[in-house]
Image (cartoon, rainbow over all chains, first blue to last red; front, side, top):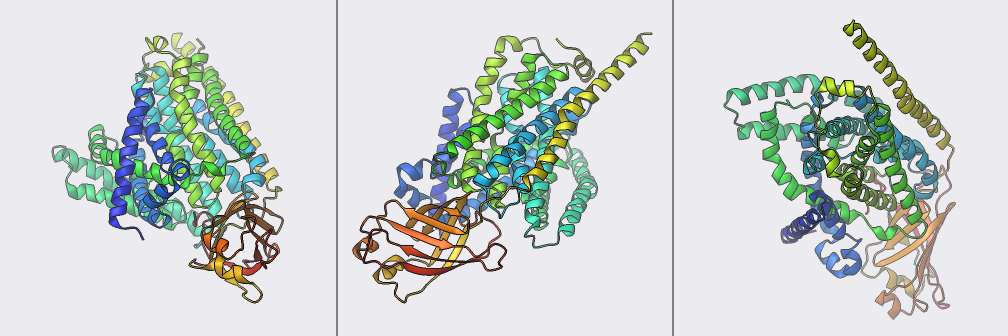
Length: 427
Length: 173
């Protein structure tokens, strides 16, 4: 059993490492989150446990990880709430066929390649406690995810938010986000159905009913919350914040109880929140700092503590290379060809593919869900974590190479009708 | 005139998008369904991962048994990635593979002081050999032995291990 002192020391070390590496990554033009992800990996058996096993055993004894896990799970719930909160249907609505085709193709292409890859990997990295369907669908989901928050940050830092490319990328990522969570929910249901503690019809029926209630009753109640927020002079009382925190926790509990992971409930709670700009900003401001500074680094560290690169040995490096190749080819080429078919220039299309290839922490979330439900083995988990890290790391330099600063000038985002019209003709 | 031409342009564009959607989304989805059916025929290695409670048969086990279990919880952890296994019993970590129903894992070098003091580590190696119950059997037990290759005076230590109930394969990790 871990003492409170040990837990405090663990959190302090995690925070320092995350901040230092986050800053270091900024110096080389990477988003801070990449540094935080690397810091998490470094604290695990892949580096600290390898070079200083006794220090690692003292700082992060196996018996103490339950506390870190609990903190990381709570943090993850509120992070997913924020992801859902940021999701605005207006980003997607009216963006035209370009976005619809590009976003769906950028999901389907890597998903298909992930399923094909599963044919090769299933006998080599899985076992008969997992069905091929569950394994293949999970591989597809892990390959097709895009990190909406990281992508938004990269677009902002590169000054691309107001360009046509930025607008299409954000809309595509939003569609990807929703699709990926729906797919993952289905995968979790399929995997857990074999040893479910509740009957499958109840799992499916209960999940559908829960979504329906959230989209109707809860959304209406939350709309009232926004009205009172506005009439109250734009101030959020602690009671209202507590009510939303309660909603996130209860939603997470219900989806976990239904056999779907708790993150889906939290995401849905965020997604049904009213999307008034001031209201969203207020919530984001209240939650974001503590999330970004405290909980996300703990989540990354917990992921790192689960990741043992030493498990990847011999021919497994070949599997790792295949996974990376399939992930990059599927996501980049899928989005790029679809964008080109929808009328964007080749350069813009490949830039969009590069942006969509950012998996970042959303992949970490999906991989942890897969690890928790036992659909992926520890070695495959390590490979997929490295793949997620590599695809996030490569985004900024590849984007700079494909779509350098000088070419971005003068490509301000057109209005929605212009975008639809623009997608009709090639340039 | 312009309105009609614009409407036509929009219709042509919409038609083209539908065609691209079918090519880029519809066909891959159909292909994926086919692959999922094809993959159902694949056979993956037997699952052995999990945490086991171990019971030793002390008759004829010899002096290495007490050195092996001294001060340890009698828990065997097996982490599995495909056929590859990482077997942990207390401070002894062994690497191996599953072949059909048989498990074999060995530690290339072991610095277990108790085993060394009991002269069970002549060539610094401990191994475990075990068999899973037949496919489809409800029994979750593992039957096998700890071996001390190279030590002619060390009899193997037979055991039976019962898998502890846990839904997740990775719960022990």
